Amino acid sequence: MKNILVTGGAGFIGSNFIHYILEKYDDVHVVNFDALTYAGNLGNLLDVQDDPRYTFVHADVRDRDAVDAVFEAHEIDTVVHFAAESHVDLSITDPQIFLSTNILGTGVLLDAAKRHWSDAPEDKYCRTYRPGVKYLQVSTDEVYGALGKDGLFTETSPLLPNSPYSASKTSADLLTRAYGETYGLPVQITRCSNNYGPYQFPEKLIPLMIRNSLLDIPLPVYGDGMQIRDWLHVSDHCSAIDTVLRKGTPGRVYNIGGNNERANIDIVRLILKAVGKDESLIRYVRDRPGHDRRYAIDNTRITTELGWAPRCTFEQGMRETVQWYLDHSEWVEQVVSGAYRDYYRDMYGTAQ
Ligand code: NAD
Ligand code: DAU
Image (cartoon, rainbow, N blue to C red; front, side, top):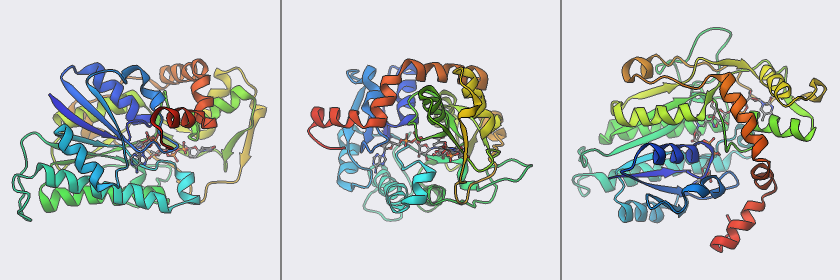
């Protein structure tokens, strides 16, 4: 039995990953460790909450005692660290929480993994660990900064983050690397491009534009709308992480992306068309400060070394995603209104 600690499992990608793992493997126990910030929602996991292979722990990755307790109680052998403040715009208006959660939280987790897995925890220089343990840092393509018209990010591209969010994620990424180099901790780092799919909080481009168009609210396009992102369906991100855990080399970085570059304005138009709304809803608004112009991933390493490939085409993925938001308008409105927080306060007796 593998005991996987998934931090941030109540968020968008984390909850999709938990579904993915529980569907694919019988012999796993998944511990979802999540502070339930505004972005975390246990409503994403209602269908697995009674599964004996699933445990939820309501705690903060910066809380050393809580992290130690979970390693001990569940004999954790694998960590997949999703928990983070993840929204670039918020990091521009309120950077401090990004430094605290994304950097210090990662430091607490790495240190716990090192101590709990070490063959000789009393020996500061011990570089050997229990067999089979793995720590995977879910990083992002934003660590590389922005591209011009041409070129792709490879794993050896310079790290030049531009926003407080991406700078905090780069710090976490490099701290993870340092634990691998200095202490020999078996770490892996994945750097994925933009995800879309079910359960994404409607602060992000695709769910925000779907919701606004359904409600006939103007669609705010930053700047000229010609910024480019490399979109990947969240299920493909989950399968890539699973592949890296199973086949990846310790200490190695893997880019994840689907060779699917799209300009923001084209995505907005596609959504309007899919829901049968008029382009007059588009509003060009003030640009995001420090807005990265283009991201694009070279995924050669993960495809050739590990045999991973994305399965979902953008057309199919977007059709399903728009339909998912149409079918889950109640989920969207609960998340937006914060009603689910009241529900969890009632359920757990604590505010999130
Ligand atoms: P999200 O904002 O939807 O979810 C984040 C989760 O982390 C939430 O459940 C939240 O409650 C939890 N969390 C936040 N602070 C915490 C803390 N201090 N302790 C414990 N839990 C805490 O984020 P997401 O979009 O699912 O992204 C997940 C991870 O993947 C992040 O590390 C992000 O940087 C990375 N990533 C995201 C994308 C993307 O397109 N969304 C792409 C590449 C990498
Ligand atoms: O590339 C991976 C990253 O993708 C992840 O690391 C981040 O956690 C994730 O939030 C995402 O960051 P982006 O900034 O690319 O995603 P966002 O959905 O916020 O914006 C996508 C693009 O759309 C970006 O160019 C800004 C633009 N945008 C966004 C919003 C919310 C708009 O034009 N209007 C909007 O209202």
